[in-house]
Image (cartoon, rainbow, N blue to C red; front, side, top):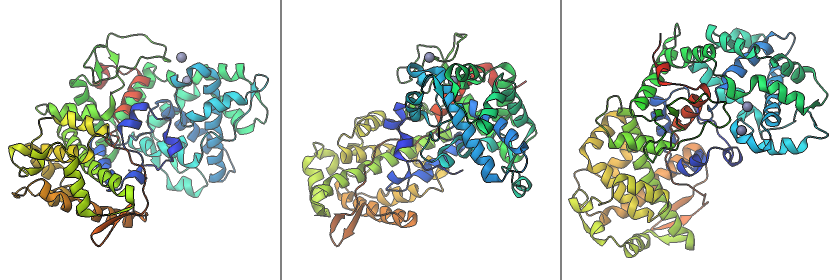
Length: 509
Ligand SMILES: [Zn+2]
Ligand SMILES: [Zn+2]
C-alpha cells in the first residue's frame, strides 16, 4: 500500500495530537524511516491510512461508484469529474448542516475549506463549490479510499470496466450493501441530481435538510454496521488477501480491546484521551468509546507490558519508532549545530556535544556498561525528545536503553529482519564493542550523513547536509519534527466512534 503524499496545507487540519505526535510527510524523512514504519503499520492495521477516519466515505463512495458507472456515454474522466463534483456537493451540504460552530463534529477531506464555503453563502443560497481541496484528484476521497475499499472487500478491480470508460472497480456483494444503504437515505438521489445536472443555487435550508438524511455521523444503523464489519473484520467469501487483511485488523482490535485501549470505562489511565461523542446523537453506553490517545501511548503501552499475547508487532513498532526517533534527534542536533555557521568541522560538533552535556559520566562509560543505561525510562526519554530537549544526549540514551534490553535485540532481529534500520543500528552500535559512548559520536554522524545521502539520491531529493572533507556543510535545511510515525490507531478510533462499535461487535455470529 502506498502513502499518499500531501502538502503541508492538507496536513494542517488533522487532529492536533497527530501534528505534534507523528512525523510530517515523507519530505521530512531525512533518514528514510517512513517505509519501514509503513511495513509495520501494515502488520497491525492493513488497509487503513491516516485518511480513513470516516465510515461515511465507505458508504458514499460505493453508492457514487455504482451511480456514476450506470450513466451512459461518458468517458472515465467525465465520470471522475462528476464524482469530484458530487464530493464537493456533499461537503457543502455537511457544512451548512452543521453550521459554523459545529464544523468539527463531522470532518471531511476539504475540512479547511468549510469556513470559506459558509462565507460564500449569499442570500441564504449556495452553489456547488468549484474547489474544496487544492488537488481533489489526489486528496479527494476517491483516491484516498480506493485501497481501503479493496482491502475491506467492498470493491474489486475491474479491468473490463476500465476498457469501457467506466471507473475501474466493481462492487462486491458487500459493496452493494453499502451502496444500497446510502441510496436509501431520503435525499441521496436529490444530491446526485443536483451534482450532475443542477446549475442553480439551492437554499441552505434545503441542503441542510438533505444532509440530515445522509450526514456522515449516521452510518451506524444495525444493518449498516453489520455490512461494514462483515468486510472490515470478517471478510466472508473473499479472496486470500482480503481475508488476511481482515484477520489482521480483527486481531489488532481484539488486542487493543483486551488492554482496554479500544473500549474502556470513561475514567481510564491518564495517557488516553477521552473524546466526547459530540456531534453523534448518542445513546450513551456505559463503555465510552475512546479516541486512542495517540499512537505513541498505544505502542509504549505494549512495549511496557510485553507479557500480553499477540503483541509482537506492537512491540516491534515501538522499538522501531524509538530507535528512529533517537536517530532523527541526533541528526536534528547535528543540523542545529551546522546551521549556525553553515559549515563546520565534524570534530567541533563532537566537542560541542560533550561540552554542553551535563552527563559526562554517560559519555565516558563504555557502550554496554550499566553506566550507559540512563536512569530515565524509555517513556521519559521519548517525552524529552518530543519536546526537543537535549536531542543528542537523550537520543543516545534512548538508543542504548532500547538496545540494552536483550529482548529488544532479539525482537529487532526476528521482526525487523527486513528493515534497513536494523543494519544501520547494528553498524552504529555494535554489540561486541567495548568503546566509550563518546568514542562512537563521530562515527554516528558519518553513518547518518551517509544514510541521508543514499536516501536522498534514491528519492531524487536535495541533500540537507553533506560532507566535504572533514567538514559538514549545510546544503538545504528543511524543517523537521520529532515524533513517531502514524500507526493509524486514532483513525481506527474515529471509525469505531462513527460506527458506535461495542465490544460484542468483535464476535461474529
Ligand atoms: Zn455530518
Ligand atoms: Zn455539534
